[in-house]
Length: 73
Image 1 (cartoon, rainbow, N blue to C red):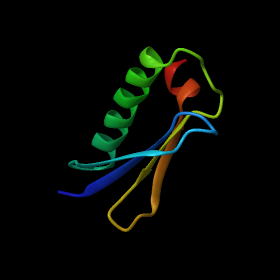
Image 2: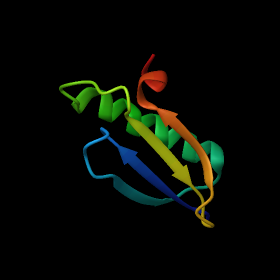
Image 3: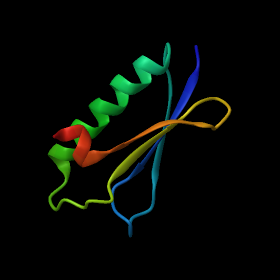
């Protein structure tokens, strides 16, 4: 199973959080990223337009990125 790294930038000033997860494919990684975006949207007290989730594959190439506000619209 491929390994995906999810880098969460909650704001421009905060350090980035990384989570590594084994998932079946890019579609499963996208679903996981959307779930992370929903969780972040519920837990963030003050919205920051720079919030972003970057998804990388085993080779560390960016598969896709999701701006939090676009994912929650």
